[in-house]
Amino acid sequence: MSRTPKSYLIIAALFSLVLAISGCGQQAAQTATDSGAASTAVTSDAQEITYTLKIDATAANKGMLYDSVVSTKPGTTVYAALIDTGLKLKVDNSSGGVYVDGIDGVVASTTSPNAGWLFTVNGEAPNTDASKVQIANGDVIAWTFTADYTKTQ
Image (cartoon, rainbow, N blue to C red):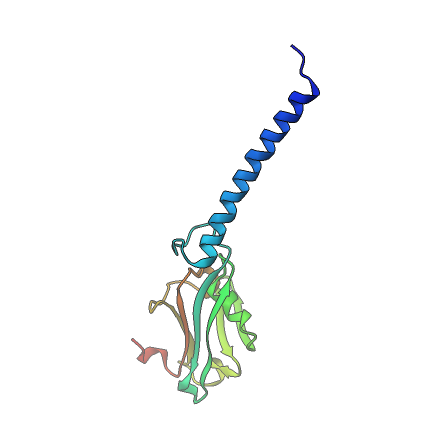
């Protein structure tokens, strides 16, 4: 059985109709998402995450150096977020990881033997360096300068 040019035209028209209907469904879903009508749940396909970053040098009489809500791509580390602030950093790299010694001129090694920059994620201090901790959507990251880390809880 051979097909006529008319049957090819009908098949092409049906195929185009299916594609058009599929595209309309995707457009409607996108419109619902853009208008806020869709769920706000974060999926693993998220193109962007939002977090809060605070850098506090009050103990060095410098006040808040940074306090902002930031958007970035998934997989960003706490250390990469610190670099993205544009503040001048003094960092020591070793086989043990990254140690942030100074942020925006507040340098722990020149302050006192027990001074240092500490970071938390959602109020918890990770047991690793900032280059190994990935940020999740909604995280609150705080870098705090302390004049004596032995007296912090």
